[in-house]
Amino acid sequence: MGTRLEDWEAVEALSVKEPHKVIPCFGVHPWFAHRHALDLAATLDPSQLLDSPPNGKDHPSRHPDLLARLAPIPPERWMPRLQSLLTAHPHAVVGEFGLDRAAVVPGTRLQPAWAHQLALTEMHLRLASELGRPASLHCVQGYGALQDMLRTLGPEGCPPKIMLHSYGGSVDLIRGFTKLPKGVGDRIYFSFSSVINGRARDKLLERLRAVPLERLLVESDQNSPAGVDPGLRAILEAVAEARGITVEEAAVATTNNFREFYGTCIERMEAVRTAVASDSRDGAAAAR
Image (cartoon, rainbow, N blue to C red; front, side, top):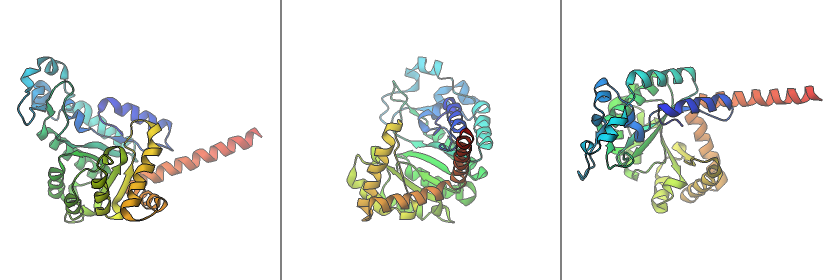
C-alpha cells in the first residue's frame, strides 16, 4: 500500500517481483498530505499546508526550521507519476489516501491542513473514478466530511468500489454511507482489523453487526508479515461472534467480498499465479 511519492517505487518493484502475490496500491496518505502540494503557491509557502491544532497551542511560524526543510513536492512532479503508475499497472488500486483530523507533523502539534486534505481526497476519488479503479481510504475523525464529499461527487465522481479501511466511525454513519443516493452507497465497503478496531471490542462488535454482510471486509493492518495471519484470525473471530456464525463462515463471506471488491485486480493476480505454477511444473518435468 503506497502512502507517498517516496515509497511508490518500492511498491511497484514488489508488485513486479511478486505479481502473483501483490496488488499494488498508489496514493498519498493524509499523514503525508503536507508533503504533496497541489499548486505552486504551496511549494513557495509550505505554511499553507499546515494547520494549528484546535487548541491554538502551536503555529507554523514557531517552526522556521521545519518550514525551511519541508520542501513540498510540486504537483507537476508527483501527480503525473501517480497517473503513470496507475496507467502502467491496470490492476492497481488507488490508495491509501483520505482524511485524518488527529494526524500531527512529528515533533510538533501542527496538522496537515484540513482544506488540503479535502482537496487531495477529492482528487484521488476523481482519479479512481476516471480510471475505474477501487479506492482504499483512511479516515480518522472525518467521516461526516467524507460522506458529504461522496454525496456531492455523486456516481460520476466516485470510484466503482470504495473501502473504508479499519473503519472507526459510528453505526449511524454506517447506515448513512450505505444509503448514499444514486447508487453511491452500494459502492461502499467497510474493512476492520483487530489491531486498530479491537481496542474497543464492544464498539467493534456493534459495528460488525451494523455493516451489511456483503459489504464486510477484514484486514490485518499490520506493518510486518509476521502479524498478518494472527491478525486476520483475530478479526474473523470477532466477525463470527458479532454475526452468530462460525469462523469458517466468516472467512468464506469476507473472502467472497474481497473478490467482489478487487474484481479484475484479483483475476490478474490469479492468472499470473496459474502461469507461475505451470512454469514451475514444466521446469520440474524437464529436470527429470
